Image 1 (tube, rainbow, N blue to C red):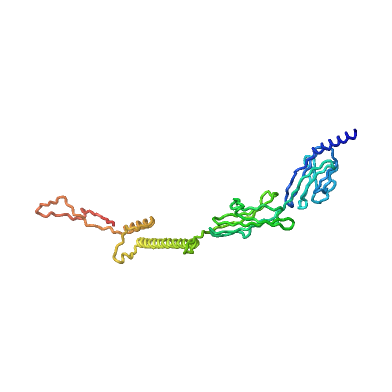
Image 2: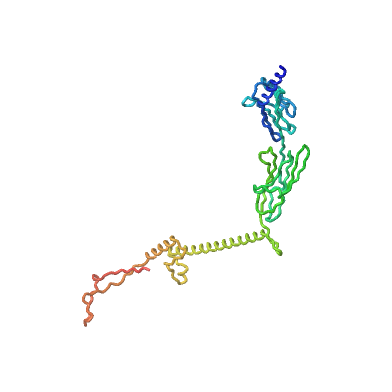
Length: 357
């Protein structure tokens, strides 16, 4: 009777410890070379020894009193959790051989197991690099994703928009060490300048690995049944016509500037002749200079010089002396006798007249 009671008590105690043991996460996926962490939490103080197992092999032994006692693998260790209610198994630089089952065992009384999945990231590349083509032509792109585990997912994007899988093909090949290589070909018609991306990924990657190129469309092919001329020829002709037009405009401006400079030089020579009192070429031919003439392009400075010349010529005009006027206060138109007129000096008047032109 006492033996049965003892077994019941031990069973109850074992059940209580089991309900208080927790291992997290239940499943963990990491990339090769990354770090993996598992936490074993215990809400009971009735344990003395904790064993961490990797694929049924003990890798770390922990005492509740003394802490970590042994670690069989250099890159595997354990640290106490932050709240002090358990221990954390740390696997540094995880390798593919670590993939499998991770267990937390309390001195044989209770055991929790989790899964560790190790994936490998390879490379992805679009061959050929940036491409330049004519509008309307068919362009082919090839993308290879090499050295992945497990087999990655691969897709294409054009200007950030994911293409349907029916628009490209895929082929897969498994090489040594269970590594996979994917190849894909994309055929598309060049309509406009675009960015083409090839993306490969596994679940452990937060963002896919991407390779991108730029597709530049430079011109549209225009072809008739009897004519092989294309847009580049039309563009060349347009540029030639534009250059000829610019040349004509430059010639017109040059001729106008030259004519204007010649006219200004003639006006300057004419004004200078007026100021110096020299005979102008017009005077030598018997003509007369119209001092009031002004060219349409004459400036205010030329006009002032012309007025100044006119004033200078006015200074040289001589003042003529006209004969004294005979005056009489008693002249009669009907007198039969001639009246004598006093022509003495004292009764004469001087009148000065100035004529300006």
